[in-house]
Image 1: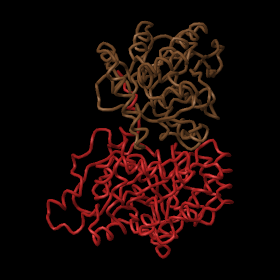
Image 2: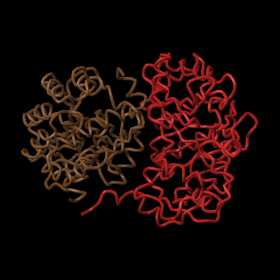
Image 3: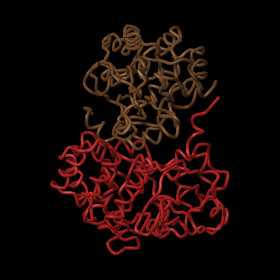
Length: 277
Length: 325
């Protein structure tokens, strides 16, 4: 396994998502939507399993479609059979649910998919209309670093871009989508593509991914257009599968209502205040 | 293959000589400095309206060994941190709400980065809580209020924090919640029950019972320094290591040069933070009263590796502890 994968060529339309969390139904819907849009590259920034049912369904689909997938902390843990998901909760309730989710995912992920998870790169570099794009799971520095909208100031984004020689950094890990472009150089910035495995803690069962596009090169400084795309899918069918697998009713509630019921400890003030719990 | 991590400041900081964090002669492991992610500002120094028995510095109404920081000095530190690309800011003391310009400082900090304010909550009343909520709403970044309390009853809390403080703390926290904020209750685990999962769950249940429907809690291990060291040596409580004559036991309080795990500079906060007080710059907020911990007057000169040769470093290493919210 190499830590870094460099994709050849220059891209114009990227469809990027993260945090599949075994939600194979949302994955199917997002891949269809990205193909309809005409993405010239689809990227998954990691965390294929966790939370949802039948983790092999999602891993199989990603592999069959040849999607470039990064290794998230969950993939690292499942792939290597580690003790836990490396989420590091101290709240006993969050820790309780994290343990259930991880045990189920580990038990239900096939050996071939675990081997595949071990082989995934941690970073991907590519060109987007001449922009240097660096993809990572949590951050370019750490696989489990949380980059939330309200705790990732512009000066820090600028520092990450300089330290990692990039114009655009794409990450996930938090499960919430947002972007911050530099005020003085709006062609550069950081995009957290969010997660498609569970809704965005906003009371809406739909999920989100990022469409990032650059205009045809006209010689001017390229500015990427970042659009967060809302995708509906059959969340009720997923909820039925989760019940059949005896996953916690709190997880099912999140899928049905759009509100997070667990893993709340890590949310900063602003993001926590927007949720119901 | 190129590794993106090779472009971080880690690679340069290792070339520079490590600075010990105490005056103790024995060597400790060297921890890289990966960049200024976190700046702590001891805005009220050691000046506090309470004198908690477990304080890891000896804060209190009569201790100005680190005086209240001048407003201009805080603002210049914020500007310096912004130029460095800081990720998080922290105001602590002492009690930060004793600073005469605290609201101005919070407003200016929130223009730079997310801010956590560590408070005992006693000075927070409804108008103050409403103003804090306004400042929070006006910023793109989170304002975290960390309210310290040490138990679920006056009987648990007040012997540690002072008579009548349990109810005063809870009144302050209630004001914050009523104003629309979600404070983080910070519990130092001087009572061993809060070191256990069932004890922590009971603490959360207690907060829910009091009407804090979305409780947020951070548990912190006690550090055997400052007033806590005097307390533990007297009482022989759970954290006592003082007064142990045996040399082996004494040595075990300190880290050996090869004790750190790979990548621990990302776990221990002192790998990416510095603390500014009116008296200078220190590696972390826990060590500001310790001999030899002062690094410089100039923040720029402190972006170097440090040598973890203080017993408090052992606590953070063993507990995997970070002061972060």
